Amino acid sequence: MKRNDAEPIGKLIQHFLRQESLESPLNERRLINAWPDVLGPTIASYTRDLYIKNQVLYVHLTSAALRQELMMGRELLVRNLNRHVGAQVITNIIFR
Image 1 (cartoon, one colour):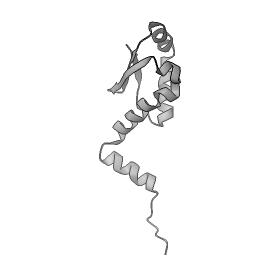
Image 2 (image 1 turned 180 degrees about the horizontal axis):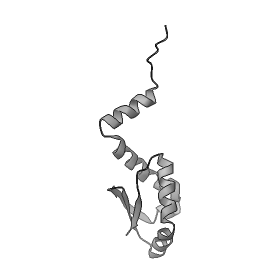
Image 3 (image 1 turned 30 degrees about the horizontal axis):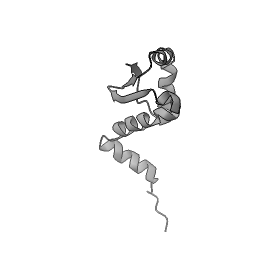
Image 4 (image 1 turned 90 degrees about the horizontal axis):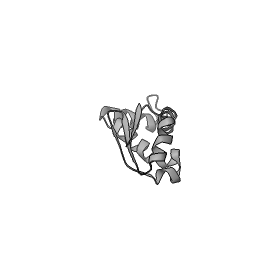
């Protein structure tokens, strides 16, 4: 017997996460975990203490030259990180 009101499990989980206000923190964690994948292991090795506050990603860098380079490509980096996660998680990046 086939049920007509059956929904995909992924849709139910997504609805539950939204209902419990867990979707945003989960996406933020996914974005921070995606940082080495998007930038590569070499650049990621110069970064530390990533955190998100009010849709802004804060990144501490150990190289001033890398900071200047990443600041020039900031908008593209924001787009790539959001695309990797599949949601609009951040709107800006602050490099320190």
